[in-house]
Image (cartoon, rainbow, N blue to C red; front, side):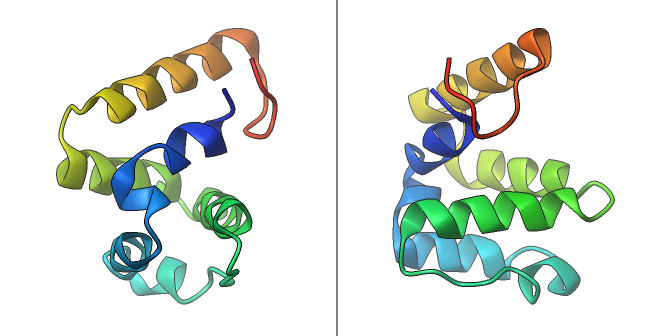
Length: 96
């Protein structure tokens, strides 16, 4: 599972209106820089790439997701995916 797939499996990220709410809860310099796409995969990828351009942007995104979703199964799967990426040195778009 790729990082983007793991994010899309989380309801607050996978659902368009929830994702917009999530995006708007990030600091303005990040939220205002994410290009919108009607394709969920491209929008989430743009969100991740934009967050990576800002100091602690990705950490902020993940903290907000955890705050909204708690320790749900999809969030635990995301944590497993992150651990695997760190262990293997894969990039966000590579599958397992």
